[in-house]
Amino acid sequence: MSVNAQVHLDKNENNKKSDKALKPLFPKQAECSYVSCYCEENVWKLCQDVSIRIPGELDRCYVVFISNPCRTVPLWKQRAGREEDRLVIWDYHVIFLYSVDCKTCLVYDLDSELPFPTFFHKYVTETFRTDQVLKSDFHRFFRVVSAKQFLQHFASDRRHMKRPDGSWIKPPPPYPAICTSTATHNLDEYINMDSESGPGQVFNLTDYVQRFYKIDK
Image (cartoon, rainbow, N blue to C red; front, side, top):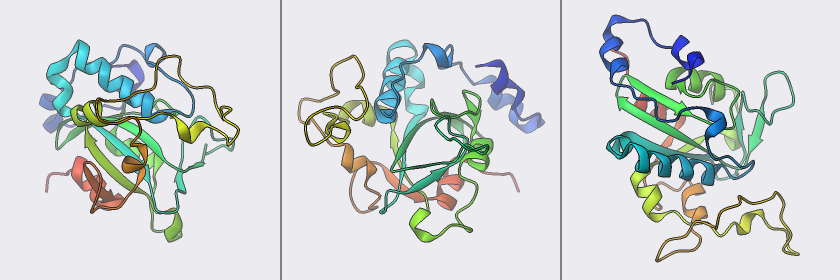
């Protein structure tokens, strides 16, 4: 865990036992596989890394696709943002969660200016803010998939990053496209926010926060 992330640890006595259970999943952000505009593959690589080095933690890891029917999702504190608040409107984005228990969850976002990792509540507050002041076209939805399931079933032939003439919009990762024995491309199933179809579960912002962050009453 980075020094910056450690600063954000909850000092609350009730969380100290949970904090002790945290393991540093990734040494440093700079050492993680990263290619700009291929967030789904960057996160797949994070899942793969955990499965190889510390497989016992994989069941506590999740992949979260963020999008909506209009494919217009505002996220703040993104490195690609140009203004002071680093706002970007993505068609979709993908992040990695490490959920130890209902009180302790870390977010790993390779495209964020926030520490790597950042505690869930801080990440949500800084990155999503609220849907209440946004038009419905900009409301964020979240498809949550277990890391293990994502590793087993996700596939992308990178067609969404090609122009009609076959040239690349952005250069692809140096390794072969991710595929499975049964699929070469199913990215749209993950970006689609129809709760009646696709892998995992789909949440609105409120339910997503309640899923991974609960406060003692």
